[in-house]
Image 1 (cartoon, rainbow, N blue to C red):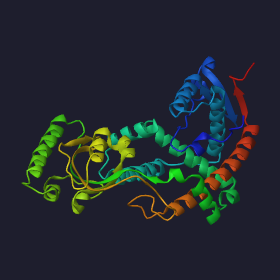
Image 2: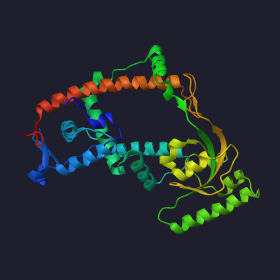
Image 3: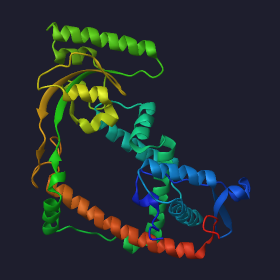
Image 4: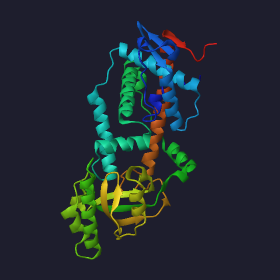
Length: 350
């Protein structure tokens, strides 16, 4: 099979690594493959394979059951060898990466994200549970450490992208560099209170009253922010409620109700109803708007970014070269480890 590289390494946050139970815990008819490395044997069960196949299908992959099982075997061989080398990744390291991802989501959403909201967002965006995401992160970190230990020179190799490569990529893919319709939003915000319908109803009613006073010019939007808005990750209360730019792509995070309302506004408009999102309740106002247009190489990639299209392309070309190199050395190491392991693949038995 051509695709020998471990999925967890090249498809970040797409398919979590699945660890099968030890042989002693599985009946033989349920086992689709077994892997022995040193004096330890682990198995992959039919249930585990079926779960992974479903995850692949959810991402649109057309890989066959046999191909997916081979990738799972490679994963297991790699992880078992890493374990024998004493390579581990602590819960603290995994949780630190989750915390970074959560902070990025909060910056993007402009408000605090609770653990249950994070779970919902992960499921919506990546089709997996938070625990599955953590195991995916752990597996990737272990595999990365193992590669750095076994192939230090190859893993430390650096790459560059020339100006000619950048410009050629831009010309071939100019249609991709479009800044979409977007609106810079300010909000008066009351956070969702978990498992407390009464508190949420009270918050919605309070914002309805505040919105009526804003629309009747009894209070300014900015004053309402100061007097009634909860604190959020964007610290918007200190900036007139400003949470930055949003567009249609934010619907997965903020929900259709919020994005549909935001994108209907013209600069200076306040939406005429209180809006609900997975994060809470909002009175929203459009600070400014932006129409879709093509970007030049020296334009910023977004209104609030300090990265130009040129810099973005260069970074991505470098990353692509690194990934291709990474796949090459990973495949070579996988082939070596697989050749030394004792593998039984019941799907390929005649």
